[in-house]
Length: 355
Image 1: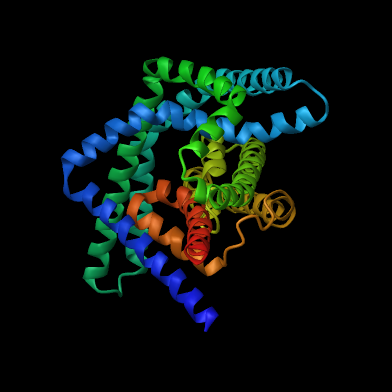
Image 2: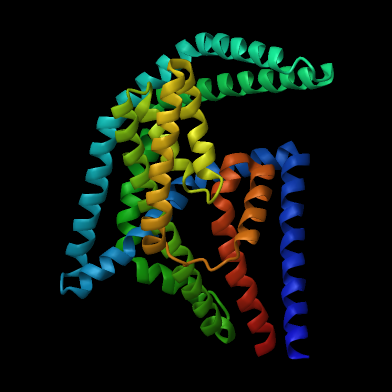
């Protein structure tokens, strides 16, 4: 009886959450005015959101240093200098190379398209026995891919070229992160005081549960993605693959997506290798496979572990849903959103039982 009530309560809150999500999505899609307002609010709050995330990820390191009897102010200053100093140096070294490779890839794109069209024509010859409608679908798919790649490269090149327009954004973040780290307890205490006293203990436990599952997952995934990016760059450089840095960065970013990330990240590398040599494709696939074996069997189990504790079927479903709604960005935020939703629903059910 009790288990049935618990299952019904879980199903109730799950349906409510899905309906709210669908309502917001439909509102965003059907009303351009609300989309414009939402975009303005996101741009306005973006520095605060990014700073909050960075402070959230760095604060446990500050706490660990403080436990080693290092004064909190000194620990904050040390982490602050190391993180932003290292990040600034990395951007200084990587940024020119990334822009150069993007511009070169954009210039070479017509050549690559001609080569892939030749491959498509060869594929037509091998599949001549298929109905003409299949070939029409292939033409449409190739045209969509070409248009999508061209638009993506134009946006990336334009975005990197306009980096100086983001000076204010990049300057504000370090300042905000410093104050968020310095006043972390004060800020969290302020928000706790806004809650009704009756629910403060339960919501505090909920926040702690989210921190335990989500915080460890994000920190672990970032470390794993850093390894994948570095290992891929070394492998691609060794193999002489064009645009090695750009492809490795893409591999590292997409590795945030469970299951599908390695496949998505490998596609551009294989596509570029195909324009250079058929033998190189095999070596690139082998390098990607080795990196993923090391990541999946050695690093992820120890660094990430089972911090989210969600069944793989649920993860795959939420990844597909996020991809359908928001593309790759949706797939990246899908698992963290599911983790938060799981913890929130569980504690909301506990709050109802408490009432």
